[in-house]
Length: 385
Image (cartoon, rainbow, N blue to C red):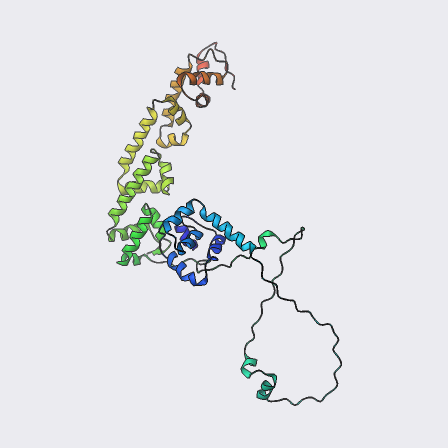
């Protein structure tokens, strides 16, 4: 269950898995195993969502419920129900007898009887007497009581015990040669539908299959995919995902790597394998020109605060130099009449229809007023707000 939830993009703690499995009976163990041995039909799915699917809910609906924290409420209700359950009555303690036994009269020692006759006289058979005796578990030490006279709240609830084969042991991995068979094509197709690119597919299949010399490698995975004739479909899916991510993130390669779950080196490697280097560079150049030639002053002032984006595009110095020269031209006429930097920023912002906060931040960061004051002899220095 824990491994299935991780593959369904909703990792869960062992406590959550135990609480979810406690809602099922032992007769449902085979159904849990059947579901968790397959790839998730929808994401994300937590342990309570898996229980909901086993109860007959559609996986897509369970994924929607998981995303809106529906199962967080279910988990709290299960805990409240468990806490309100009356505890089992404790066994009655045995009261020792302190009465002094009466003295017994001396009698002659009895003649030992045969085993069969002794068994008949005591009312039990020989098999019952020689059978192994079951040992009773010792009573657990009661929880310590705090100063208020009550046991700690976290000890009141009787948590369910760990269940399932995946509680402590990892699933055994098989050789990747199993994927080269005809039955492996269906497994690859199902796994490719659940992952956007080959690196995510490799991370998923490496949990189940070994390579020729240890862990499954990317070259071995590409060889298996190519042997089944699925490389074209995978490259088409990857090309669409990469170009869409660069468009959504406006050419920022760092954010594209984060969105696709790749490292920067893996993203570059994927671009080379797909032959997208030229197209990606054209997209990035398009957004560079858009940032450098923006006509709206508010947009340019807002871009000044996005240092990482400008550095990713490689235009941070060019952009700041162009904006500094533009602000110097806008501020030059208003500089003599302003007493403070905040007043200067407010005047220029109202004149050109820009937010005064962004204008003040730009003047402080670029040092426009200070540079103009140094160039203009005899001008009064501006005090900071």
